[in-house]
Image 1 (tube, rainbow, N blue to C red):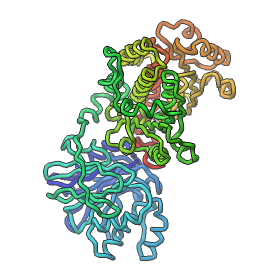
Image 2 (tube, protein in one colour; image 1 turned 135 degrees about the vertical axis):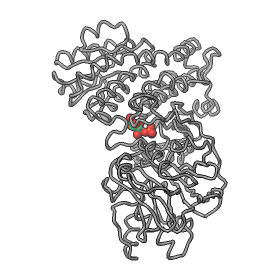
Image 3 (cartoon, rainbow, N blue to C red; image 1 turned 120 degrees about the horizontal axis):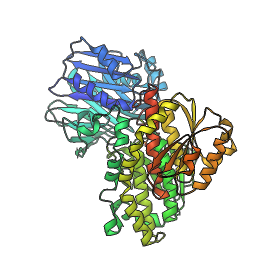
Image 4 (spheres, protein in one colour; image 1 turned 30 degrees about the horizontal axis):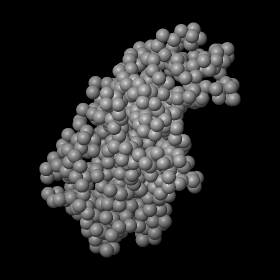
Length: 614
Ligand code: F6R
């Protein structure tokens, strides 16, 4: 939620910050703002709307400072309007601040500051923090670093902040607790950002602040990192960035989402690379192998996640129970963290998260850790909070996912979960060597089958044109493809704003069947394996109520073809791998419908890519 960018060096800060904000817009796009720090003065421009609106508002201004900070906002406190936009200034106009997160105790702090004579323009928690910093700075005559530290010690909540003082145009102070913050280290210049994408073309060296740390970044000097509580200086690890510019650009596609859907043959292969070695008869996963006793002795595995990652967790449950016969429970992280769950020391808790920053998943994991469970992460973002908190884990190597709707991260999560389930099943003896080997060989071939599944794009476009004006849609699947149905429905609703529900196909007659009439498109996932005959019966039930049937079937299927209004073929594969293939046409269908409805596919309304507030 919210993206922060900053720059200090010899170049003009404005273009670097604007470009950086554009790359971070996936984190929130309710408003955008920038402030440049000139000796003794500043230039503040902010607006409701997108970074493009900010650029429009900046036209014609003389913006040549070489230090500044910017922000793109996903609103939490106060509606998205110009006044609530960041950056915020303190009452004396000297302190400039951008903030990602939530100051939970902002109300009492605000009341106190009002008693000291401070006034407030906005409804935000962030303006309170700017004034609190001013308060400490002037009352105690502190340096900016000290004033920020004093203020943060009064704050309860989550934050990544960047702060400047117009008494000095040579310094930016940053801090983090619960929201990510990276510092790019160039030659005599520094970049600040919520993730490294705004500065990949300038430097490969970055410091990722740890929770509870702050840094003073001064022109021409070393970055000084210290603990917010206790003030102890720490020596930060400098990490080499693994991402390149090409990975965060659209590469000729109209939208990031379409690019990311089409990248899946590669992202799945990258996720298997070096791990799946069928010739040698093994799956190599250090995170699992080094802690195998934890998994084998586990009485159960609990998977915690949100949204699409939760859907991947549901497929994980089927896979692990099938291949390794270890009981699995899948929980919404947001429910798990607040319901006093029973967690034992011999439980393994797996968190699944693309961003590695989702606040609820992070909190669920902390709870499990406190109760002594072994915690394992499946994350896409290296260096993310979840990745750092876990005892061990496996990264998905999907590459940066920029479209807000998750696509390639989902299939990469399914790939990692399949590898884990196969590995556990092989080693605890629940899978025969023969079956294990044959599944490994088949899995190796999945990227090619995904490539084939993508070839249905034209028929999917035709279907999209036919149903784009629907107000509702039902998605049905059974077994492994019940989660696929949930995921298909989520994709459609989040980017096209069509109301869609996913159901286990057999549940339809317990209520949802009442919705079916000649206007209701029902997307049925009906591959040949698994509960095919049962799903065919469900299709008959829909047909006799005149519902419109769009079926995802195995290539060559004739039975469903006769019943359905449209079929989309996917290649034949084992039932256990079918969610990876069946999800591809559902992603494309949502994408085309959303484009045809004129929706902003990469930045759907009200959403943000990384949900760092609960
Ligand atoms: C939907 C989507 C969200 C995320 C959810 C969890 O397309 O992207 O539902 O899956 O917000 O995010 P992560 O995986 O980053 O924890």
